[in-house]
Image 1 (cartoon, one colour):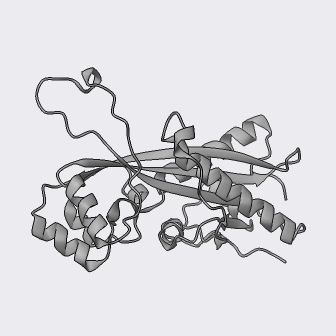
Image 2: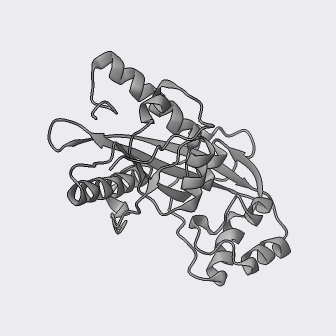
Length: 252
């Protein structure tokens, strides 16, 4: 069975995008926002959500920023191995997996003390609120402050040596600055229900954007997928592969 063409007409035809034409590209995520971001920039992947339970112990990571990368690795491997087992003659050429977390972050430094002189802060993951009361608590804590959005992106592709696939990964970090919002605005947002089901209790692309004063970094990363870094990294991998004679997107 011939794969659908994952490259859309409006895609910028960089060497890496040309490599994807006629390839089976899979997004290991049910997130409509990730699919929409990829489609906006010219990639229309086949969507195969991962069944990985996302239950890695956070305490096992010395650097919390490694957590979403590891989770994305497990998601991607699960999907890749499942698709190969289901149809060995039609393996995916590229599986894209991602995981996004929201972390607490130090408040802006006021005065003459440089950030490097302050004691290190232990960052904590801001989970999805369990209800509107929890959502209100989270957003009042964030009000006038900063959180950090971290997305781990993993690319999995076939290679000729064991275990039969290779992996490349990146992580993208973006700071989200909250305005000093009046409580009435925060409460109105919570009552809308938009923040339920979202890590950190807000969605920057919806009415939650009213709570935000500044996004420092990739806006798309806050939505759920760091498009700019992803496409740049894809291009770097293709260039390196051609120089070194590797397997990245080279096996038909």
